[in-house]
Amino acid sequence: MDYIKNYSLEGKVAWITGASYGIGFAIAKAMAGAGAVIVFNDIRQELVDKGVEAYKAEGITAHGYVCDVTDEDAVNQVVETIEKEVGTVDILVNNAGIIKRIPMIEMAAKDFRQVIDVDLNAPFIVSKAVIPAMIKKGGGKIINICSMMSEFGRETVSAYAAAKGGLKMLTRNIASEYGEYNIQCNGIGPGYIATPQTAPLREKQADGSRHPFDQFIVSKTPAGRWGEAEDLGGPAVFLASSASDFVNGQILYVDGGIQAYIGKQPS
Ligand code: NAP
Ligand code: GCO
Image (cartoon, rainbow, N blue to C red; front, side, top):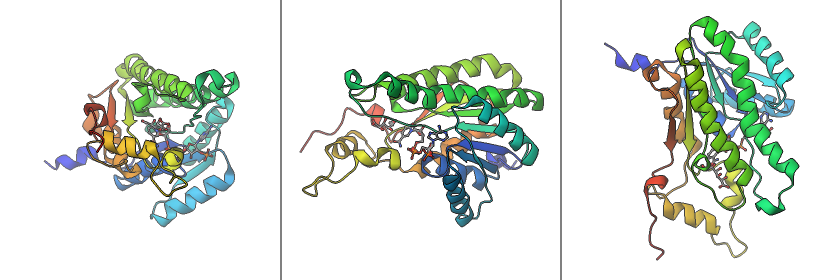
């Protein structure tokens, strides 16, 4: 039997939120490579247009929509449009996310709320919008992009850690509540990945030396490097495919081993 077929996404519609670039873009590329039809959204038309071009450069005809994932009416509208223009969403990747690195006692409540809104409320809104059609269709896959901050805290990321910790439990609750409808909901917990979101943590210092956080992460990661967005493609295809039909409510950490390692003694 051709076992690799279990990893095929042929004929599936995959919606990766906020996937004009970064991790979402890499996951969409991998899913397209496994046969999925790609749908993505971003907040601004120019970013959607840029994203469509970027996918085209990879030989992918992606369907792009302008949609702020925190806006429930806009999300419900775009789901209706996707279902008309592309088809029922079989695979949802709640990828869109923001971070604000501010010491907690200096953080304005509105900033805290905005991070929670994008990183936790939006996955609730988008999942709620696609689950009814998944139930009608006989099943579906939801993948929430969690984080190491679903498990750990660190200075200046209180809102983000609270959101990603909540997203871990939302993942488990969707798995619990909708597993009987053949819907599997799992999370991917990336380690430290080289994308625009983490660019400030890798910026060269004035004297040309590496950012202290860059050195810290590399010394804490057995793989001895930052992750690339492409490192997440394979795990995402696995969780989107029938090869993972009995995997539910799990967070798959893709972190180069950072959570297993005490860290290299500073030289
Ligand atoms: P990124 O480069 O900042 O990309 C985030 C994407 O989300 C952008 O396309 C952004 O669009 C979109 N987005 C933000 N707010 C949105 C909204 N309200 N509606 C629609 N789209 C929105 O981040 P990334 O590094 O690729 O991260 C992607 C996901 O992985 C996030 O959930 C992040 O928390 C998570 N993650 C990242 C890392 C890492 O090390 N990079 C590690 C663990 C988890 P705009 O450009 O229009 O804002
Ligand atoms: C930070 C980073 C991390 C990564 C990621 C780690 O400031 O600590 O942005 O939060 O984005 O979430 O898994």
